[in-house]
Length: 107
Length: 115
Image 1 (cartoon, helix red, strand yellow):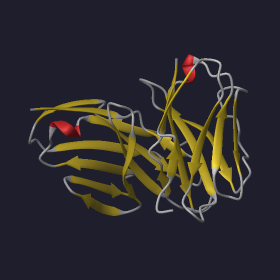
Image 2 (tube, chains in turn yellow, purple):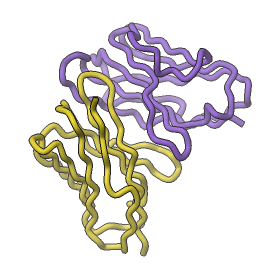
Image 3 (cartoon, chains in turn red, brown):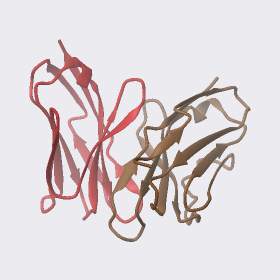
Image 4 (cartoon, rainbow over the protein chains, first blue to last red):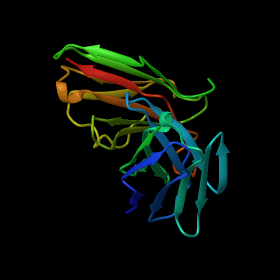
């Protein structure tokens, strides 16, 4: 059974700090998703990774297939980055979601 | 289309009314998934389609929930006699196929509020 674990569960940071959120999964997957859920509830797909590294603006996502681990990094964090970040692993059909990391960035 | 589209983006309905949520997947994607997230809870799987068929309906929370897909395209999630506990963000995703390793693409969700 595939399980997805995220850490930390909660994270607070000062504006400008570099942030890392980690995600581990237990079985081989086809893709790893990072999602962002805003306080209002809307969910945005940030990245979909099957290998290596992707970058979009201040966000960077990496995945290590051998270690079954992915990280989401936020550089120069800003209060508008405050949200819940969710990773989800994808096998052959449904996705398995982590419980999310609640990030608060203070000015 | 360019991405997965869900409508409406927000829906407020009175308890006891029926609602329909729509998902337009990426053209050519044969697999389609519905998830939901209730306030303060994690995302939960509801149902998936391979083509127009839904092999596994065990994730639907009650018999008030139903879903269909036509033309291997648009899918509708219907909730009958809505209850307050149905309030949630309903998320749709699609992928090229099941059974092969294909990435899934997400819509932005429908926020349903039952008052």
